[in-house]
Image (cartoon, rainbow, N blue to C red):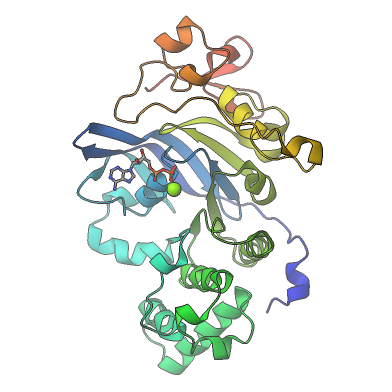
Length: 349
Ligand SMILES: Nc1ncnc2c1ncn2[C@@H]1O[C@H](COP(=O)(O)OP(=O)(O)O)[C@@H](O)[C@H]1O
Ligand SMILES: [Mg+2]
C-alpha cells in the first residue's frame, strides 16, 4: 500500500500501447438557436500510463468531449453524429446501449469537477462504494467487497478508511469527497480515466496532493488519463501530452515540454500568457485574451480564432487552416506554419 512518504516522490512513468483512439468525433447539440457544434471533428489517442491534457477556455467543448467518450452527452439535445471511439481495439459507438453499463467503470471512467454530482447524500460512502463494486465483483461476498472498498479508499489517500466508510458525504471535506469520487472511479480498474477539472473546487494545497495521488494511481495501475482543465499551469504539472481546444476543435497538440517551449498556435500563446507568473512583478499584469470565441451554432468558415488573432489576414478569415506538423509530431492548425511545417491533414471545417 502507498504510504504518504511514497506519494510525495514523483512516480516512475511507463507509457505503453494505445488504449483509446478517437477518429473524427463530432457531437452536436440541436437547440432552438441552431446546431451547436460542441465537438467538431476530433482526432486523438492516448496510451497506457500516459496523461493527455485537454485545455481551453470555458465553453470550448471539453466536457462535451468527455461525455461523448462515455456516451453520456445530454439527450435528447446532444447527438454524436459521426466518428469512432476505439477502446482496446473496439469501437464503442457500435455497441448497444445496454453494454455501456459495463464499459463505463470497467473500461472507461470519469471524475467530475463537483463531487456531489457523483455522490448520493443519503447513503454512507461505504454503501455507495459497495454497490458500485458489486457490479464488478459479482461472485464475491459482501465482506470481501467491503475490504476492497477500504483498500481503494486507502489507495486514494483516505486516512483510517475503515472508519470513513461509515460517514455520509456531508461529513467529509471537499478534498475528502473528491478522493472518494476518485476511489469510485478507479474501483472497476478502468483502462482510461477521464478527469474533468477534478481540482477546480479544491484549495491549492489539496489540489497539489490530489494531482500527486492521481499520478501514483497511474503508476500503480497503468491507467491512461485524460485530464481536462482550463489551467495551463495544471497541464504543466500533470500531463505528458496536451491538446489545445478552441471552439469545438483541436488547434494544437504536442508533448508538454516542446509545446510549452514553442507554442505554435496564437491561441496557445495567448493561453500561456494568461498563466500568472511566480515572479511578483508580473502578478498585476495578468493577460486576458481580448474578445469572445465565436458562437458554436454560428461558426465562421475560416479559422475560428481569427477575430481575436493579432496575426490574422484575409486567408485566415476565408479558409479554415489545415493541420501542420513538425518532425516531432507537434501539430497546429494555423496558416502561418505553411512552408515551415509539413501539411498532415486537410481542413475539415
Ligand atoms: N445541455 C446543453 N444544452 C445545450 N448546449 C449545451 C449543453 N451543455 C453544453 N452546451 C454548450 O456546448 C458547448 C460546449 O460546452 P462544454 O463542453 O461544457 O464546454 P467546456 O467544458 O469546455 O467549458 C457550449 O457552447 C455550451 O454552451
Ligand atoms: Mg467543462
